[in-house]
Length: 155
Image (cartoon, rainbow, N blue to C red; front, side, top):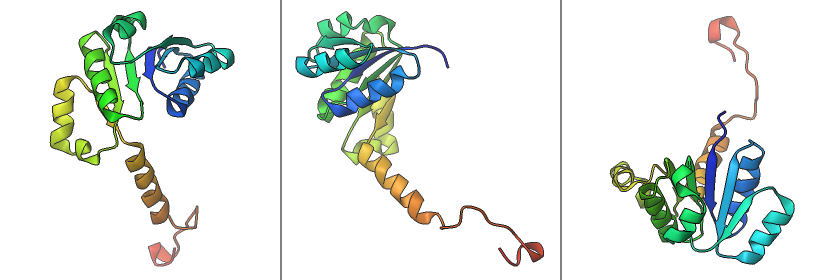
């Protein structure tokens, strides 16, 4: 996988956890967060660049070097901030943008196209992903391997 410049806009555990996972992949990660205390904790435990501030602020995104960003991920708890961060980030030069949302209406095909036209490449809804995973687990049988006998008459 190609080394990427990634900005993560977060305000808590989700952003921090995501940054740690992506650091293991050897990408250049910058975390933008309004909480300077959390950023100090991140700096103490990782080799990440941190910038305190509001991710919808143009000067903050410019300090994070948005023009050279391959991927901007906004996972703040407020979906409006995530949407605005992705839209502004794309207009300032981010190659790809991802915004965390809670409103599943945004994930309908016609709305996804609307958000793409605004500059948001992907919308992610953690609650929906969790629900889909639970459904997948419920659809699985307890058996992990099956064998067919008698031309498929017995499995």
